[in-house]
Amino acid sequence: MNLTLHIWRQKGPSDPGRMVTYQAKDVSPDQSFLEMLDRLNEDLILRGEDPVVFDHDCREGICGSCGMVINGVAHGPEQTTTCQLHMRSFKDGESIYIEPWRADPFPVIRDLMVDRSAFDRVISAGGYVSINTGSAPEANSIPVRKEDADLAFDSATCIGCGACVAACKNASAMLFTSAKVAQLSRLPQGQVERKRRVLNMVEQMDKEGFGNCSNYQECEAVCPKGISTQNITVMNREYLRASLSGA
Image (tube, rainbow, N blue to C red):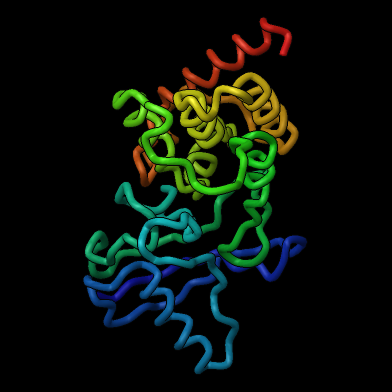
C-alpha cells in the first residue's frame, strides 16, 4: 500500500503547528498504525529530520497511551485503540490525516503528544478507596452480588485514553469520570467515601476546564473499551444525592 500522510507537526506548546505531508510507501496491511509510524520515523531519521512524536507504551490496547485523531475520528475508523488499528482498515492510495487530541485540558506537548495529566488530577480527587494496606483480605470476605460485580467491572475497563474528550465538541470528561464514580459506587468497598468522591471528582473535572456532556454520545461511539454513557446517568444521580445530603 502507498499512502499520503498529513501529520500535525508542532515543536512545542507555544509553537503554532502545521500539517506536514509525507509519503508512506510499501505499507503492509498487516502492520499496526503505530508500526507504520515507526517506519516513517526511521525514514525521517535517516534523512536527518525530526521523527514524529507520539505517545505509546504497551501496544496491546491496555494502557491507553496511543491517542490520536485519524481522519477526524478519535483512534481512527475502528472502535479500538490506535495501537490495535491495522493498516488493512485503509485503502491503497488513501490520504490519512493524523492530529493530536484537540481539547484545552489536553495541551499539545509536541506533534501528536498531549498532556493528559488533567485525568490524573481528577482521579486523585476521589477515584480511589481508602483501605488498610496490611495483608490482602480473603477474596470472599466481602460478598458482592454478581450483577454489581459485572457492572463495576464494565466501568473499570476504562483505560483513560481520552478519546471521549477528543470526540466531544465540549471536550467533556464525563464518560471518564463517571466510569470511576460508577465503578466504586457499586462496590461495598467504595461506600465510605461515596458522597465525597463524586463531589470532589466533578469539582476537579470542572476546574480542569472540561465541558459539560453534549448528549451526542460520540464518547461512547469512539470508546475503545465500550464504556456506556449509562455511567453518566449513574454519576448524575450520585452527584444529586450527595448534594442534597449536604455532604
